[in-house]
Length: 182
Image (cartoon, rainbow, N blue to C red; front, side, top):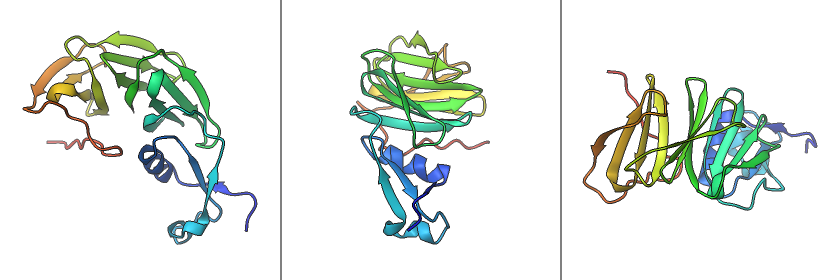
């Protein structure tokens, strides 16, 4: 067995990390397309960067950013070594990258950062809990409790676009909204 495993492709680390409640790094000892299908090709890496539950992860501007309970934000350039910061006590449920910024959402708050280190909080009125956020076609779109769908061109000024006839909208972990150009 190769004692110097190589990190596996970005798409796989993103997919696997979102599916786990605590971020766990996996590496492939022989990262070819055939070997990735074999469970023996994968190796768990510890320690975990946090004991708190993580809810989402995104890759942007050359780094991974994960968010979770109690305002936890983790960053990594390689998906193996992680740095942690706390943005307060409120849980962060989702993070996205677009237009040169990272945007994380939680209970009535939107956090914006150009570098995933320095974050600026913005309050979203009339929306207590946001579960997910995406950026596409020059627009930020967030979904939340009460069936709300909100949009913003800058992640600061939000407009309620629709309120679905449901009490809660929370996509399953790892499921992302699909944007289609018309």
